[in-house]
Amino acid sequence: MAASVRLLVRRVLRRSSAGVSFSAAGSWSLSACCCAPPSRRSFSDGAAEKNTHFGFETVPEAEKAKKVYKVFENVAQKYDVMNDAMSLGIHRLWKDALLHAMQPQPGARLLDVAGGTGDIAFRFLEYVAYQKERRLARRTVDWAQTASRPDMCDSYLGNREGDDEGEEDAPRRSRVVVCDINKEMLKVGKQKAQRVGLDDGVSWVVGDAEELPFDDNQFDIYTIAFGLRNVTHVDLALQEAVRVLKPGGRFMCLEFSKVTNPILARLYDAYSFQVIPVLGEVIAGDWKSYQYLVESIRKFPAQEELKELLEDASFSCVRYHNWTGGVVSLHSGFKL
Image (tube, rainbow, N blue to C red; front, top):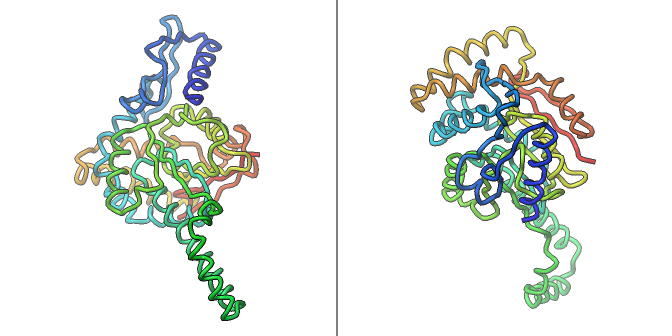
């Protein structure tokens, strides 16, 4: 409730400072957000409407979110299959590398924005479970090497008798919240979670990256993988990321970037524009959506520009790493 109230106040203040009218019908709440595509900013007749890009097309800012929503609504059922086809499976390696760079510890709370089908969320839960098992195995080995036989018997009996009491001292469980603006993408993610047995520990929330329905200082890690380029106002999304992270929390963005090798760049352009839309038509029956996805990559800020945007949003220790010749880059930073 507190998050919804603050969200409404921020919207009203933003519109009043910009000379924009705000009607009661446009008010935001988490329950309304979960029922329908979000209604975007409403402008008064006298206000000049700004334009932005939708791929290579120029559209009013108020229209972009609707168009992006429709793209992912159309491709949701075939999204994962197309990711494998488009990247020849390499996207799995990029996401694995993201988790290894993150190195989350048991008890961490992750917010994965634009993570509808759950790829990052599932990897996160599997990673922290593996780390927990390793720690337990290491402690068991150390204890077995140092404990005498009577001590081992006493400890075993003590543990059996005090199992219920020890639960209060157990570390906090790791949790992940998948937040996506598109209900269809989240629906696919929930179905996957049930199939692979990872539905416990994941929450699914419909929400806008520019106005997240969460209280301040809630998460240890914020991730957004291949989603930031679809946001209308990147600066607002980054400000929201800072807000919901705890002090010391980490921001990580995996996104397509500017290819640094000129030969690879030419091959990449040819593959992107001549092959990917064809795959989209053959596999997903949707040429236009994948044409947009290719174009949106070219319109997204290059590595250094995105680094500057993160620093402008008050992230510290911002850095990036190019992977696969700059086809993708991982940007990271911390909230002080």
